[in-house]
Amino acid sequence: MSDQKAILHLPGQEPVELPILKGSAGNDVIDIRTLGQTGYFTYDPGFLATASCESAITFIDGDEGILQHRGFPIDQLADKSDYLEVCYLLLNGSLPDKKQYDDFHRIVLTHTMLHEQLVQFYKGFRRDSHPMAIMVGVVGALSSFYHDSLDITNEKHREIAAFRLISKMPTIAAMSYKYSHGQPFVYPDNSLSYAGNFLKMMFAVPCEEYVVNPVLESAMDKILILHADHEQNASTSTVRLAGSSGANPFACIAAGIASLWGPAHGGANEACLDMLIEIGHVDNIPEFIAKAKDKDDPFRLMGFGHRVYKNHDPRATVMNKTCHEVLDELKVDDPLLDVAMELERIALEDPYFVERKLYPNVDFYSGIVLRAMGIPRSMFTVIFATSRTVGWISHWKEMLDQPGQKIGRPRQLYTGETDLQFDHVDVRCK
Image 1 (cartoon, one colour):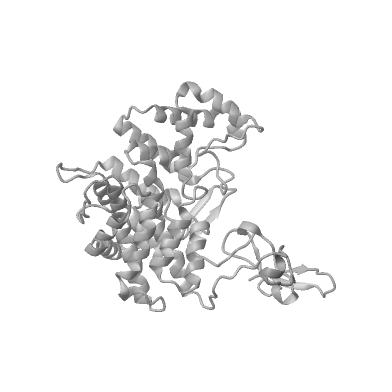
Image 2 (cartoon, rainbow, N blue to C red):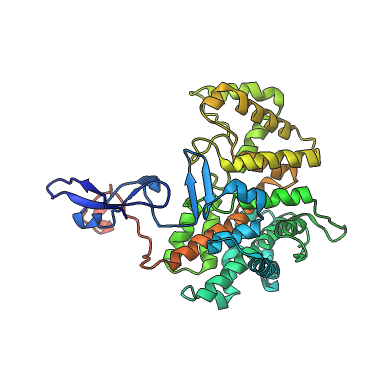
């Protein structure tokens, strides 16, 4: 807290002093917790100017294109680390030493199997169910199988639940895919890496040997790292709000998955691919570029620019390189990928896009990579949820560790009727 105060002048009242809080980085914050005593509340739809919590996990500066986890820039983590090391960092606040990393790695990879009764749970879904629908249901059902880790006041229970969710989420995701495609489940292989294991569970079949491609394994690991956390977004805020009620961790993460499912949040790379399908061919690009530049045309290029990053998306820089590595490795003959690469070239060279900083974002590149790897659009958000699970758990644990937490209870600006008089239906209908 600084010594500075904001002075608020309200009608008919003495000036109100509100403390100004300073974090280690980012904007200063006016503490309005006592404002309700004046009879006033703030109005901020979407919480665009409201800090709902105090956190030390992730810092974003959208104007400068900065994303840091526990102080480490995202490009360094993606280049020098792996997903499980980033998981350890997010959960514990510091990088592990060799023994801590090995122990963490071992625990995660030896708890990847699901309870066999839970495997049978999948059969209750229709075959054409969206994998996200299955994922929400299965993750929520974990609380009915693991009663020994539901006491959120017990630090050991919180740790066990965290490990279970991180370990089992790739298995849940891959089984959601397999079930919706009528293929037999492939059980985890603990000799593989986290990313490699996921790829094998996705693509292996019992009748053929499956060898993990190291280029695709590295690409999947980077996708997981780049989506692991992104501060107080809609799904993370959902997890925190659910957690503030004392809900068990599996229910909280299921709530986060449901929030992520929304097309305005986790479905951005799906929307980008839909746009590429709409464009269809490289020859059609000039027409759509003209539509994008026409302010009276509702068409928008998906995957360019970002709501948070006003300069550039630092994750896109990493994903750009990975994208080209995957395309070079697979040599996929796909007209949509040709469209994507031409759009990338135009966005990086055309003055209209450069001046407005409408650069390709992480969703643009990750959607291309996932399509090239043979992963269907319906699985894009599922993979996002698998990656983001560690971020949700980290925020959930941080919230529970902070003293004085209260259940979330936003206020409202009421605009409905008041003081109406009730009459019995026979009277009202005369």
